[in-house]
Image (cartoon, rainbow, N blue to C red):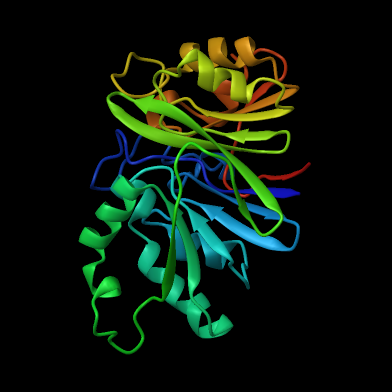
Length: 253
């Protein structure tokens, strides 16, 4: 299984206008963070988790030639806004793209991309096949995904475990029963927004504490705001076995 970090950043705390902070002007490529998303290649399937506003560029940058499915964690714009750009894969593959989401997220997708779901199919619009998921495990081909429910303040968000790999974004609290689903993971990816307290995201200290509770062989932090600081500086603060992810990082599991 190959994991590619398509994006490790977030819209949280990012100015609308050009930012001249030390992170945004850093020459280190690890500080260039697009909105959070990963790609899983396993058992002949190519699966992307979340298609944020940077989805098109992420696909081009990673030279992705084929896409089987998108799995959504939740309905916030920084995780769904790029779904329209699957149309290039529709054209190339001459097939609809499988979309996996909860009923609540599907309702949001139908609202935000209403033209996709109209009875009249305008030529060239994205073609999708919706699949409803909840907290029960499901398969995409031979790839088994175990949903893990976390709370993004008061909004339920799904993380996913695939084999020994667990990916979670936008978490602030996680119930003990859901934590049990994560334990035993060899690789954990968890959000670490910033150092200061935040209402709906793990801070750096909270993410470190959670990672130490799970005890994965390696933990990577994602969904990183520029407020957290530069990759090199933050790396010096992290315990062994914990590191910041960065756009373009590939893991072979």
